[in-house]
Length: 515
Image 1 (cartoon, one colour):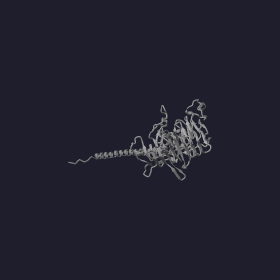
Image 2: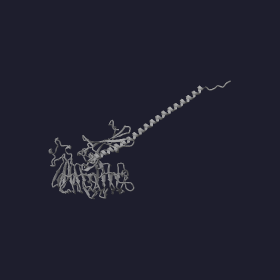
Image 3: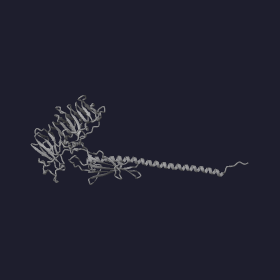
Image 4: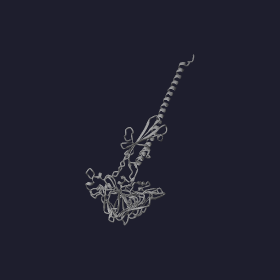
Protein backbone atom coordinates (compact mmCIF):
# COMPACT_ATOMS: atom_id res chain seq x y z
CA UNK A 1 0.00 0.00 0.00
CA UNK A 2 1.50 3.31 -1.04
CA UNK A 3 1.58 6.49 1.26
CA UNK A 4 -0.40 9.57 0.13
CA UNK A 5 1.86 12.28 -1.23
CA UNK A 6 0.98 16.01 -0.63
CA UNK A 7 -0.49 17.81 -3.59
CA UNK A 8 1.85 20.33 -5.25
CA UNK A 9 -1.21 22.45 -5.92
CA UNK A 10 -2.03 22.53 -2.19
CA UNK A 11 1.46 23.76 -1.27
CA UNK A 12 1.19 26.56 -3.78
CA UNK A 13 -2.20 27.56 -2.33
CA UNK A 14 -0.82 27.82 1.20
CA UNK A 15 2.07 29.95 0.10
CA UNK A 16 -0.31 32.26 -1.79
CA UNK A 17 -2.50 32.73 1.23
CA UNK A 18 0.47 33.69 3.42
CA UNK A 19 1.73 36.17 0.82
CA UNK A 20 -1.71 37.70 0.55
CA UNK A 21 -1.89 38.08 4.31
CA UNK A 22 1.51 39.77 4.38
CA UNK A 23 0.52 42.12 1.58
CA UNK A 24 -2.74 43.02 3.35
CA UNK A 25 -0.88 43.71 6.58
CA UNK A 26 1.66 45.83 4.73
CA UNK A 27 -1.14 47.76 3.08
CA UNK A 28 -2.81 48.39 6.43
CA UNK A 29 0.54 49.45 7.89
CA UNK A 30 1.16 51.86 5.02
CA UNK A 31 -2.33 53.32 5.42
CA UNK A 32 -1.81 53.68 9.16
CA UNK A 33 1.57 55.32 8.69
CA UNK A 34 0.17 57.64 6.03
CA UNK A 35 -2.72 58.60 8.29
CA UNK A 36 -0.36 59.10 11.22
CA UNK A 37 1.94 61.20 9.05
CA UNK A 38 -1.01 63.32 7.92
CA UNK A 39 -2.15 63.66 11.53
CA UNK A 40 1.33 64.72 12.63
CA UNK A 41 1.54 67.17 9.76
CA UNK A 42 -1.86 68.64 10.62
CA UNK A 43 -0.94 68.80 14.30
CA UNK A 44 2.26 70.61 13.38
CA UNK A 45 0.33 73.09 11.24
CA UNK A 46 -2.23 73.63 13.99
CA UNK A 47 0.49 74.11 16.57
CA UNK A 48 2.27 76.55 14.29
CA UNK A 49 -0.95 78.52 13.69
CA UNK A 50 -1.63 78.61 17.42
CA UNK A 51 1.89 79.89 18.04
CA UNK A 52 1.48 82.53 15.33
CA UNK A 53 -1.93 83.47 16.76
CA UNK A 54 -0.19 84.15 20.06
CA UNK A 55 2.38 86.25 18.19
CA UNK A 56 -0.47 88.11 16.50
CA UNK A 57 -2.11 89.11 19.79
CA UNK A 58 1.28 90.17 21.14
CA UNK A 59 1.75 92.27 18.01
CA UNK A 60 -1.74 93.74 18.49
CA UNK A 61 -0.87 94.68 22.08
CA UNK A 62 2.30 96.37 20.80
CA UNK A 63 0.14 98.28 18.33
CA UNK A 64 -2.20 99.38 21.13
CA UNK A 65 0.75 100.71 23.13
CA UNK A 66 1.87 102.58 20.03
CA UNK A 67 -1.60 104.12 19.64
CA UNK A 68 -1.60 105.30 23.27
CA UNK A 69 1.90 106.77 22.93
CA UNK A 70 1.10 108.56 19.70
CA UNK A 71 -2.17 110.00 21.07
CA UNK A 72 -0.45 111.21 24.24
CA UNK A 73 2.49 112.83 22.46
CA UNK A 74 0.62 113.94 19.31
CA UNK A 75 3.42 112.60 17.10
CA UNK A 76 1.88 111.65 13.76
CA UNK A 77 4.86 112.18 11.44
CA UNK A 78 8.43 111.01 11.27
CA UNK A 79 9.59 114.64 11.25
CA UNK A 80 7.84 115.22 14.60
CA UNK A 81 9.57 112.22 16.15
CA UNK A 82 6.80 109.73 15.53
CA UNK A 83 6.99 106.15 14.33
CA UNK A 84 6.16 107.14 10.75
CA UNK A 85 3.81 109.27 8.70
CA UNK A 86 0.21 108.48 9.52
CA UNK A 87 -2.58 108.81 6.95
CA UNK A 88 -5.17 111.36 8.09
CA UNK A 89 -8.80 111.11 6.98
CA UNK A 90 -11.89 112.64 8.61
CA UNK A 91 -10.23 113.04 11.99
CA UNK A 92 -8.78 109.52 12.05
CA UNK A 93 -5.06 108.75 11.89
CA UNK A 94 -4.03 105.37 10.42
CA UNK A 95 -0.74 103.60 9.83
CA UNK A 96 0.44 100.07 8.99
CA UNK A 97 3.75 98.88 10.41
CA UNK A 98 5.69 95.99 8.87
CA UNK A 99 9.19 94.85 8.04
CA UNK A 100 11.90 92.73 9.60
CA UNK A 101 11.18 94.00 13.11
CA UNK A 102 7.67 92.53 12.92
CA UNK A 103 8.57 89.11 11.46
CA UNK A 104 8.81 85.76 13.24
CA UNK A 105 10.48 82.38 12.77
CA UNK A 106 9.59 79.69 10.19
CA UNK A 107 9.15 82.25 7.45
CA UNK A 108 6.23 84.06 9.12
CA UNK A 109 5.93 87.77 8.36
CA UNK A 110 3.96 90.22 10.48
CA UNK A 111 2.23 93.56 10.11
CA UNK A 112 0.02 95.68 12.36
CA UNK A 113 -2.59 98.20 11.20
CA UNK A 114 -3.44 100.96 13.70
CA UNK A 115 -6.15 103.61 13.58
CA UNK A 116 -6.96 106.32 16.15
CA UNK A 117 -10.12 108.43 16.00
CA UNK A 118 -10.12 112.05 17.23
CA UNK A 119 -6.40 111.85 16.78
CA UNK A 120 -5.73 115.55 17.44
CA UNK A 121 -8.87 116.77 19.20
CA UNK A 122 -7.89 118.50 22.45
CA UNK A 123 -10.99 120.60 23.17
CA UNK A 124 -11.65 120.72 26.89
CA UNK A 125 -15.28 120.70 27.98
CA UNK A 126 -16.44 122.27 31.21
CA UNK A 127 -19.72 120.94 32.53
CA UNK A 128 -21.13 118.23 34.77
CA UNK A 129 -17.84 116.40 34.26
CA UNK A 130 -14.84 118.31 32.97
CA UNK A 131 -13.37 116.21 30.19
CA UNK A 132 -11.28 115.91 27.08
CA UNK A 133 -12.65 113.93 24.14
CA UNK A 134 -11.85 110.26 24.01
CA UNK A 135 -10.36 108.37 21.08
CA UNK A 136 -10.99 104.83 19.85
CA UNK A 137 -7.93 102.80 18.90
CA UNK A 138 -8.39 99.84 16.56
CA UNK A 139 -5.41 97.54 16.05
CA UNK A 140 -5.33 94.59 13.65
CA UNK A 141 -2.23 92.38 13.67
CA UNK A 142 -1.73 89.93 10.78
CA UNK A 143 0.79 87.08 10.56
CA UNK A 144 1.36 85.59 7.09
CA UNK A 145 2.72 82.03 7.27
CA UNK A 146 5.20 80.49 4.86
CA UNK A 147 2.40 78.67 3.00
CA UNK A 148 0.59 81.95 2.36
CA UNK A 149 -2.16 81.46 4.93
CA UNK A 150 -2.79 84.21 7.48
CA UNK A 151 -3.64 84.59 11.17
CA UNK A 152 -5.17 87.88 12.34
CA UNK A 153 -6.15 89.24 15.76
CA UNK A 154 -7.88 92.55 16.45
CA UNK A 155 -8.09 94.72 19.58
CA UNK A 156 -10.18 97.82 20.20
CA UNK A 157 -10.10 100.21 23.17
CA UNK A 158 -11.20 103.67 24.21
CA UNK A 159 -8.34 106.05 25.03
CA UNK A 160 -8.90 108.76 27.62
CA UNK A 161 -6.92 111.34 29.53
CA UNK A 162 -5.55 110.21 32.90
CA UNK A 163 -7.19 111.84 35.91
CA UNK A 164 -4.51 113.38 38.17
CA UNK A 165 -6.26 112.89 41.53
CA UNK A 166 -6.35 109.21 42.43
CA UNK A 167 -6.26 109.46 46.23
CA UNK A 168 -7.84 111.35 49.09
CA UNK A 169 -4.45 112.40 50.44
CA UNK A 170 -1.17 111.80 48.61
CA UNK A 171 2.46 112.63 49.41
CA UNK A 172 5.13 112.14 46.75
CA UNK A 173 8.89 111.79 46.85
CA UNK A 174 10.20 114.15 44.18
CA UNK A 175 13.69 115.17 43.13
CA UNK A 176 15.62 118.41 43.08
CA UNK A 177 18.88 117.72 41.32
CA UNK A 178 20.56 114.84 43.13
CA UNK A 179 18.38 115.26 46.23
CA UNK A 180 15.05 113.63 46.98
CA UNK A 181 12.38 115.22 49.10
CA UNK A 182 8.98 114.50 50.59
CA UNK A 183 6.78 111.44 50.62
CA UNK A 184 5.19 111.55 54.10
CA UNK A 185 1.65 112.07 55.35
CA UNK A 186 1.19 113.14 58.98
CA UNK A 187 -2.15 113.25 60.76
CA UNK A 188 -1.53 115.10 64.01
CA UNK A 189 -3.20 114.49 67.37
CA UNK A 190 -6.47 116.20 68.04
CA UNK A 191 -9.04 114.14 66.20
CA UNK A 192 -8.22 114.31 62.49
CA UNK A 193 -10.05 111.91 60.18
CA UNK A 194 -10.25 110.98 56.50
CA UNK A 195 -13.24 109.43 54.72
CA UNK A 196 -14.96 109.70 51.33
CA UNK A 197 -18.23 110.87 49.79
CA UNK A 198 -19.72 111.87 46.42
CA UNK A 199 -20.37 115.55 45.74
CA UNK A 200 -22.78 114.75 42.88
CA UNK A 201 -24.87 112.58 45.21
CA UNK A 202 -24.95 115.34 47.83
CA UNK A 203 -25.88 117.93 45.18
CA UNK A 204 -28.85 115.82 44.06
CA UNK A 205 -30.37 115.36 47.51
CA UNK A 206 -33.85 116.71 48.05
CA UNK A 207 -35.34 118.84 49.35
CA UNK A 208 -32.04 120.34 50.50
CA UNK A 209 -28.86 119.74 48.47
CA UNK A 210 -25.59 119.48 50.39
CA UNK A 211 -26.94 118.76 53.86
CA UNK A 212 -24.74 119.73 56.79
CA UNK A 213 -23.65 116.12 57.32
CA UNK A 214 -22.66 114.31 54.10
CA UNK A 215 -23.07 110.59 53.61
CA UNK A 216 -19.56 109.17 53.91
CA UNK A 217 -18.04 105.76 53.28
CA UNK A 218 -14.74 103.90 53.40
CA UNK A 219 -13.23 104.40 49.92
CA UNK A 220 -10.64 107.06 50.82
CA UNK A 221 -7.00 106.19 50.15
CA UNK A 222 -4.21 107.90 52.07
CA UNK A 223 -1.08 107.38 49.98
CA UNK A 224 2.55 108.15 50.80
CA UNK A 225 5.62 107.14 48.84
CA UNK A 226 7.40 106.62 52.17
CA UNK A 227 5.48 106.81 55.48
CA UNK A 228 2.03 107.54 56.88
CA UNK A 229 2.02 108.74 60.49
CA UNK A 230 -1.21 108.68 62.49
CA UNK A 231 -0.99 110.32 65.87
CA UNK A 232 -3.44 109.92 68.75
CA UNK A 233 -7.12 109.87 67.75
CA UNK A 234 -6.39 110.03 64.03
CA UNK A 235 -8.78 107.94 61.91
CA UNK A 236 -8.70 106.74 58.31
CA UNK A 237 -11.96 105.33 57.04
CA UNK A 238 -10.56 103.61 54.00
CA UNK A 239 -7.07 102.46 53.05
CA UNK A 240 -3.42 103.39 53.29
CA UNK A 241 -0.88 102.76 50.55
CA UNK A 242 2.87 103.15 51.08
CA UNK A 243 6.09 101.70 49.77
CA UNK A 244 7.14 98.57 51.71
CA UNK A 245 9.49 98.96 54.66
CA UNK A 246 12.34 96.61 55.50
CA UNK A 247 9.90 93.96 56.67
CA UNK A 248 7.98 94.20 53.38
CA UNK A 249 5.02 95.77 55.17
CA UNK A 250 3.50 99.21 54.79
CA UNK A 251 5.39 102.13 56.34
CA UNK A 252 2.86 103.15 58.97
CA UNK A 253 3.55 104.60 62.40
CA UNK A 254 0.69 105.15 64.80
CA UNK A 255 -0.32 105.45 68.41
CA UNK A 256 -2.45 102.77 70.02
CA UNK A 257 -4.55 102.47 73.13
CA UNK A 258 -7.88 103.86 74.21
CA UNK A 259 -7.31 107.09 72.27
CA UNK A 260 -5.24 105.46 69.56
CA UNK A 261 -5.41 105.89 65.82
CA UNK A 262 -7.78 103.85 63.66
CA UNK A 263 -7.56 102.37 60.19
CA UNK A 264 -10.86 100.72 59.41
CA UNK A 265 -13.48 99.62 56.95
CA UNK A 266 -17.23 99.06 57.23
CA UNK A 267 -16.81 95.56 58.68
CA UNK A 268 -13.76 96.19 60.88
CA UNK A 269 -14.26 95.12 64.49
CA UNK A 270 -14.74 98.01 66.90
CA UNK A 271 -12.02 96.51 69.12
CA UNK A 272 -9.45 96.54 66.28
CA UNK A 273 -7.40 99.70 65.90
CA UNK A 274 -5.44 98.97 62.72
CA UNK A 275 -7.14 96.73 60.19
CA UNK A 276 -4.20 95.32 58.23
CA UNK A 277 -6.52 94.14 55.44
CA UNK A 278 -6.88 97.85 54.56
CA UNK A 279 -3.14 98.25 53.86
CA UNK A 280 -1.30 97.93 50.58
CA UNK A 281 2.32 98.35 49.48
CA UNK A 282 1.33 99.46 45.98
CA UNK A 283 1.07 103.27 46.21
CA UNK A 284 0.04 105.10 43.06
CA UNK A 285 0.08 108.84 42.44
CA UNK A 286 1.96 110.58 39.66
CA UNK A 287 3.47 114.05 39.73
CA UNK A 288 2.38 115.33 36.34
CA UNK A 289 3.76 118.45 34.69
CA UNK A 290 1.67 121.60 34.73
CA UNK A 291 1.41 123.91 31.73
CA UNK A 292 0.65 127.46 32.83
CA UNK A 293 -0.67 129.91 30.23
CA UNK A 294 1.87 132.53 29.19
CA UNK A 295 -0.47 135.25 28.00
CA UNK A 296 -3.66 136.87 29.14
CA UNK A 297 -5.15 139.94 30.75
CA UNK A 298 -3.00 141.63 33.40
CA UNK A 299 -4.50 141.41 36.85
CA UNK A 300 -3.80 143.19 40.12
CA UNK A 301 -5.28 142.66 43.56
CA UNK A 302 -8.84 143.98 43.77
CA UNK A 303 -9.49 147.28 45.50
CA UNK A 304 -13.23 146.72 45.46
CA UNK A 305 -15.43 143.97 44.08
CA UNK A 306 -14.17 142.62 40.75
CA UNK A 307 -16.35 140.20 38.82
CA UNK A 308 -14.61 137.61 36.68
CA UNK A 309 -16.40 135.36 34.22
CA UNK A 310 -15.62 133.13 31.27
CA UNK A 311 -17.62 132.81 28.06
CA UNK A 312 -16.85 130.26 25.35
CA UNK A 313 -13.18 131.17 24.87
CA UNK A 314 -10.99 130.67 27.89
CA UNK A 315 -10.33 133.71 30.07
CA UNK A 316 -6.86 133.93 31.64
CA UNK A 317 -5.77 136.54 34.16
CA UNK A 318 -2.11 137.02 34.94
CA UNK A 319 -0.86 138.65 38.09
CA UNK A 320 0.93 141.78 36.95
CA UNK A 321 3.50 141.91 39.75
CA UNK A 322 4.46 138.25 40.10
CA UNK A 323 2.92 137.86 43.57
CA UNK A 324 -0.73 138.36 44.32
CA UNK A 325 -1.95 139.55 47.71
CA UNK A 326 -5.70 139.65 48.23
CA UNK A 327 -6.23 141.31 51.59
CA UNK A 328 -8.78 143.93 50.59
CA UNK A 329 -11.37 143.83 47.88
CA UNK A 330 -12.96 140.69 46.46
CA UNK A 331 -12.78 138.62 43.31
CA UNK A 332 -16.15 137.07 42.47
CA UNK A 333 -15.99 134.15 40.05
CA UNK A 334 -19.45 133.95 38.54
CA UNK A 335 -20.45 131.19 36.13
CA UNK A 336 -23.47 133.15 34.90
CA UNK A 337 -21.99 136.62 34.76
CA UNK A 338 -19.90 135.67 31.76
CA UNK A 339 -18.99 139.24 30.80
CA UNK A 340 -17.90 140.10 34.34
CA UNK A 341 -20.10 143.16 34.82
CA UNK A 342 -21.53 141.96 38.13
CA UNK A 343 -25.01 141.35 36.75
CA UNK A 344 -26.52 138.03 35.66
CA UNK A 345 -28.70 139.21 32.81
CA UNK A 346 -29.50 138.83 29.13
CA UNK A 347 -26.12 140.22 28.08
CA UNK A 348 -24.54 137.02 29.40
CA UNK A 349 -26.50 134.54 27.33
CA UNK A 350 -25.45 132.73 24.19
CA UNK A 351 -27.05 133.38 20.80
CA UNK A 352 -29.68 130.75 21.56
CA UNK A 353 -31.34 133.23 23.91
CA UNK A 354 -31.38 130.86 26.87
CA UNK A 355 -29.08 130.82 29.87
CA UNK A 356 -28.04 127.20 30.38
CA UNK A 357 -25.02 125.14 31.29
CA UNK A 358 -23.73 125.12 27.70
CA UNK A 359 -23.14 128.88 27.95
CA UNK A 360 -20.64 128.52 30.80
CA UNK A 361 -18.00 126.07 29.68
CA UNK A 362 -14.76 127.48 30.90
CA UNK A 363 -12.76 128.18 34.00
CA UNK A 364 -11.47 131.48 35.19
CA UNK A 365 -7.73 131.04 35.57
CA UNK A 366 -5.50 133.23 37.71
CA UNK A 367 -1.81 132.62 37.05
CA UNK A 368 0.57 133.71 39.81
CA UNK A 369 4.24 133.58 38.89
CA UNK A 370 5.45 133.87 42.48
CA UNK A 371 3.56 133.99 45.79
CA UNK A 372 -0.18 133.97 46.51
CA UNK A 373 -1.81 135.16 49.71
CA UNK A 374 -5.55 135.38 50.31
CA UNK A 375 -6.13 136.94 53.69
CA UNK A 376 -9.72 138.08 54.20
CA UNK A 377 -9.30 141.18 56.29
CA UNK A 378 -12.10 142.50 54.14
CA UNK A 379 -11.05 140.70 50.94
CA UNK A 380 -11.40 137.22 49.50
CA UNK A 381 -12.36 135.11 46.50
CA UNK A 382 -15.96 133.96 46.05
CA UNK A 383 -17.01 131.31 43.54
CA UNK A 384 -20.74 131.24 42.82
CA UNK A 385 -23.42 130.35 40.28
CA UNK A 386 -21.52 127.41 38.82
CA UNK A 387 -18.32 129.39 38.38
CA UNK A 388 -15.00 127.56 38.29
CA UNK A 389 -11.54 128.80 39.27
CA UNK A 390 -8.05 127.49 38.65
CA UNK A 391 -5.27 129.12 40.68
CA UNK A 392 -1.89 128.30 39.08
CA UNK A 393 0.82 129.24 41.56
CA UNK A 394 4.55 128.94 40.91
CA UNK A 395 5.55 129.70 44.50
CA UNK A 396 3.93 128.89 47.82
CA UNK A 397 0.50 130.08 48.89
CA UNK A 398 -1.47 130.89 52.03
CA UNK A 399 -5.25 130.92 52.16
CA UNK A 400 -6.31 132.25 55.54
CA UNK A 401 -9.55 131.88 57.55
CA UNK A 402 -12.02 131.18 54.79
CA UNK A 403 -10.30 133.37 52.21
CA UNK A 404 -11.75 131.35 49.34
CA UNK A 405 -15.47 130.68 49.53
CA UNK A 406 -16.54 128.06 46.99
CA UNK A 407 -20.28 128.51 47.18
CA UNK A 408 -20.92 125.86 44.52
CA UNK A 409 -19.76 123.27 47.10
CA UNK A 410 -18.25 121.22 44.28
CA UNK A 411 -14.52 120.59 44.86
CA UNK A 412 -13.91 120.34 41.11
CA UNK A 413 -14.84 124.04 40.79
CA UNK A 414 -11.80 125.19 42.76
CA UNK A 415 -8.29 123.93 42.08
CA UNK A 416 -5.05 125.29 43.52
CA UNK A 417 -2.26 123.88 41.37
CA UNK A 418 1.45 124.26 42.01
CA UNK A 419 3.37 124.93 38.81
CA UNK A 420 6.90 124.69 40.21
CA UNK A 421 9.05 122.16 38.35
CA UNK A 422 11.46 121.32 41.19
CA UNK A 423 11.09 120.45 44.86
CA UNK A 424 12.11 123.51 46.82
CA UNK A 425 10.89 122.57 50.27
CA UNK A 426 8.42 125.46 50.12
CA UNK A 427 5.32 125.13 52.26
CA UNK A 428 1.75 126.18 51.51
CA UNK A 429 -1.11 126.44 53.95
CA UNK A 430 -4.86 126.64 54.16
CA UNK A 431 -6.31 127.75 57.49
CA UNK A 432 -10.01 127.02 57.60
CA UNK A 433 -12.49 127.91 60.34
CA UNK A 434 -15.26 126.58 58.10
CA UNK A 435 -15.85 124.15 55.26
CA UNK A 436 -13.36 124.29 52.40
CA UNK A 437 -14.38 122.83 49.04
CA UNK A 438 -11.54 122.37 46.58
CA UNK A 439 -8.60 120.40 45.24
CA UNK A 440 -4.97 121.08 46.08
CA UNK A 441 -2.39 119.68 43.67
CA UNK A 442 1.13 120.75 44.66
CA UNK A 443 3.27 117.59 44.27
CA UNK A 444 6.58 119.45 44.57
CA UNK A 445 5.95 121.43 47.76
CA UNK A 446 4.63 120.74 51.24
CA UNK A 447 1.00 121.35 52.04
CA UNK A 448 -0.68 121.77 55.44
CA UNK A 449 -4.39 121.97 56.13
CA UNK A 450 -5.12 123.58 59.48
CA UNK A 451 -8.43 123.45 61.33
CA UNK A 452 -9.64 125.98 63.85
CA UNK A 453 -12.81 124.58 65.37
CA UNK A 454 -15.44 121.87 65.07
CA UNK A 455 -16.68 123.45 61.82
CA UNK A 456 -13.33 122.93 60.08
CA UNK A 457 -13.70 120.46 57.22
CA UNK A 458 -11.98 119.80 53.91
CA UNK A 459 -14.02 118.52 50.95
CA UNK A 460 -11.99 117.42 47.93
CA UNK A 461 -8.48 115.99 47.65
CA UNK A 462 -4.94 117.06 48.49
CA UNK A 463 -1.62 116.17 46.86
CA UNK A 464 1.73 117.45 48.13
CA UNK A 465 5.35 116.57 48.65
CA UNK A 466 4.75 116.20 52.38
CA UNK A 467 1.15 116.55 53.58
CA UNK A 468 0.14 117.55 57.11
CA UNK A 469 -3.40 117.41 58.50
CA UNK A 470 -3.25 119.54 61.61
CA UNK A 471 -6.20 120.06 63.98
CA UNK A 472 -5.96 123.19 66.10
CA UNK A 473 -8.00 124.11 69.18
CA UNK A 474 -9.64 120.67 69.30
CA UNK A 475 -11.02 121.23 65.82
CA UNK A 476 -11.64 117.51 65.20
CA UNK A 477 -10.52 118.18 61.64
CA UNK A 478 -12.31 116.12 58.98
CA UNK A 479 -11.10 115.46 55.44
CA UNK A 480 -13.73 114.16 53.01
CA UNK A 481 -12.43 112.83 49.70
CA UNK A 482 -14.77 113.58 46.81
CA UNK A 483 -14.88 110.35 44.79
CA UNK A 484 -16.15 112.29 41.77
CA UNK A 485 -12.65 113.78 41.40
CA UNK A 486 -11.44 110.36 40.26
CA UNK A 487 -13.08 111.08 36.88
CA UNK A 488 -12.03 114.72 36.58
CA UNK A 489 -9.32 115.96 34.24
CA UNK A 490 -7.54 119.22 35.03
CA UNK A 491 -6.83 121.12 31.84
CA UNK A 492 -3.52 122.58 33.03
CA UNK A 493 -2.15 119.30 34.40
CA UNK A 494 -0.46 117.47 31.54
CA UNK A 495 -1.66 113.88 31.87
CA UNK A 496 -1.15 111.09 29.33
CA UNK A 497 -3.78 109.14 27.47
CA UNK A 498 -4.45 105.63 28.78
CA UNK A 499 -6.74 102.74 27.93
CA UNK A 500 -10.05 103.30 29.70
CA UNK A 501 -10.81 100.48 32.10
CA UNK A 502 -13.11 97.80 30.74
CA UNK A 503 -12.87 98.91 27.10
CA UNK A 504 -9.94 96.79 25.85
CA UNK A 505 -11.62 93.93 23.98
CA UNK A 506 -10.90 91.52 21.15
CA UNK A 507 -13.02 91.41 18.02
CA UNK A 508 -13.45 88.91 15.20
CA UNK A 509 -11.58 90.35 12.21
CA UNK A 510 -14.01 88.97 9.65
CA UNK A 511 -17.33 89.86 11.30
CA UNK A 512 -16.36 92.72 13.61
CA UNK A 513 -18.20 91.11 16.51
CA UNK A 514 -16.79 91.10 20.02
CA UNK A 515 -15.23 87.82 21.08
